[in-house]
Length: 442
Image (cartoon, rainbow, N blue to C red; front, side):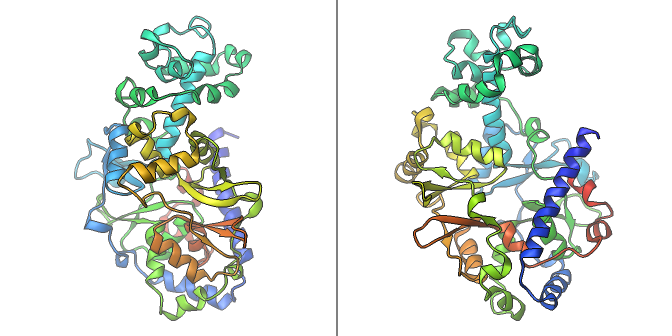
């Protein structure tokens, strides 16, 4: 089987198994589930509230990574559509928009650039990998303590390719050694990342295809909200652009967070009150159990926290202490913006622990409260109370804790949305004109 097909079917299988697990865990009467589906299928996308300010923030593909981080941070958003700077008014959306950039893509680029650069140097001499000294990675040089011209020469694709694909890679154990070498980055990390080539001129378009988690799949104003909810739950999209039929411009941008906040505003309606009054156990929550929760100890390095999110494709971690995993904080993938935009606060980057990172942000910036505290609930909490916490605190996950504050589960925005719907047979292909396999391979 071709590799592309393997990835595609794997993604679809993951979506299906997650959703099947949810449906089998629900303890809702069939008539109630059908009534909820019917209600959402009758709500047009055009009725969903627009983004704050009425304008969808778009990032041109030729924007540098550093400036993209600034735009996301200043606009207080997690992601944005990437527009083709050469786009013309008569282009369709496939030509006009190249994808979506978010903090997930940026953190992958930051960490993997460091590791690959370190790998190139770990392979040994430039001659050993068939690459000139001038092509050795700047970030890798810093990781291994190199100085002088080599340290600022920049990393070339050829260097990485030769180091990873060459026979020397196996002999030197690059896959194992590179992350360790990258951990040794110090305060010069920021100088190289934002001021030296090629990192200084790396654009959003350059990383978009390699580090994209979500396909770019817009819905039209006359689609139903059931389409949107399925895309944001079963099919794992974190955001859904909205366009007008026959026109390429994005009219709205619906996120998981916006949907949950919309559900909170439905309080008082019979259909919502009926399900929101139920304990989370009736919905099979938490879907992620105690053994499956991925956490970070407060005394571990902050770089390890971001690596853990990257490796597990998750957006946040509970910060815990002790063998009982008592929750004391929360780290989100979005928090990498502080490392990129506030380098003066983290001169001791390579020794910075998770708790030191949190305390530094809270005490030395004017953004107290921006780092979300751990939002928790109990096993006997109602779905309505969970939705209220997620919506009112503008967080993306809530941790389920026992009486001793031990983390025993996690509930995400995706989990909450999944509680309200199921997918009718052939729904995606009937409404979009292509299959789920094609959608996930956009």
